[in-house]
Length: 502
Ligand code: 6YU
Image (cartoon, rainbow, N blue to C red; front, side, top):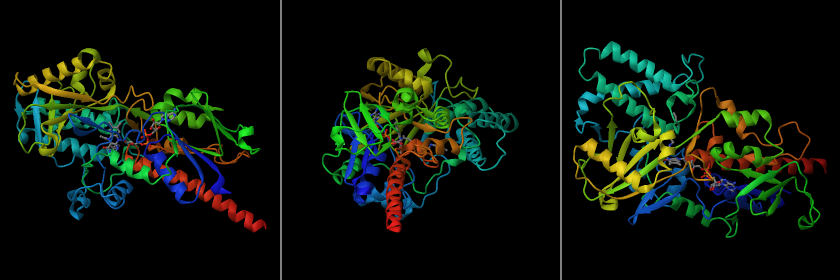
């Protein structure tokens, strides 16, 4: 019966934990999680800098309001502050960038006037919104979001800002905003993001908020509700043998359709696998991860969907060079009026991909701490550099953009998601030429419908398998619950059939 079915969940990120939670609540007795590393949480990872909490991975609850399961869980565990819980915060609907106190620093060391920059920001936001409106229509005029944004920006700049002194620098700011968007989408360039599908991603109401005690607190609370020894840590999975009907002495004569082989040589048998491994890892290891391999259409969708890098570089400073109310500082390279979101020579100019610094608030908690955001191949290259070199380049950048050569960085910590062997990047996006069908293909269980083999041997969860909330924590959690529900209803269904036959 269902409660005795052996379920192995691969990956102890929020989707795996969510799946386990639901199955155990429904009475499943044989649930285990196999995790490659020594910790739970995956891309939810809280670290520290000089004793202060920093988020190496996920940062915000995107759209903290009643429809968001992460918001509901976090409020249930009392992990959020009052402002985040307020009705007012929950009802904010944001179009584009959140309303932050921003300033614009330029490569010539001058602050750019807010009034001068506002038209460029407005145009960018309007165009971004327009890019989302092509979803479910057949009107997308181009294949990528990048092409659309650049073509329209160029047209507007030629038509509306022609006589304007600020035209060049507004175009340069546009490049900065494109780079920022690369981070939001988790891509190298917006030219790789599909225009017709861009609007498939859904935003929930609520002004993004953080966990005052760290995102990992959520994981700790969820883990506390699971049986103590449910996770097998430090066991990277090498290969999932499905359709294999292993029959061994250890399985007491029962046959199991799936066997999970770990790199250390251990093998675990199961009736069902819920695979939550990041898309980045799957892309890199798909030829050895499944035996037999993925069916062609699933393989193609997996290869086509995008998975890119977004990293953070945290800087602690002796004293602030920004105004007290400043929440974000954009970096505008004045010579970048060609509307480009990637650099031509990564090795010498990777730093140009950094779009902005966010200021960590409140100051009483963080001191004077900034978080620099950098996406794409430039970010992947940055990960390979020694820390002193990154520190040196960041110091030079601050000197150049503030015109103040005395600024010193006390400490630096960076994330390195591309070189994390079990993530291989940051999160997924719908790449050019992809559609929602590719996400559905990725999420489709094995064996495929219609097969006479044992059903639901390998189920697929994880952020990249959610059609409207991919790339987020709430999306990931919902996919874990979805796959647990699939098993729950499978067994309910067969239970009903058995009763009917009697
Ligand atoms: C969010 C945010 N956020 C910043 C950065 C990153 C991400 N996200 P997991 O990877 O957690 O778990 C898998 C496990 O599998 C893991 O433990 C592995 O070790 C294990 N594993 C791998 N291989 C294995 C093997 N062989 N054997 C055994 N185990 C193995 N999300 O809601 N708010 O602020 C951010 C951000 C730097 C890296 C984020 C954010 C993404 C989430 O972190 C992520 O989706 C989930 O944690 C994934 O959980 P999981 O369980 O699926 O995998 C229009 C449009 C545009 C669309 N985008 C707009 C949204 C913007 C998204 N922005 C995110 C931004 C930030 C800053």
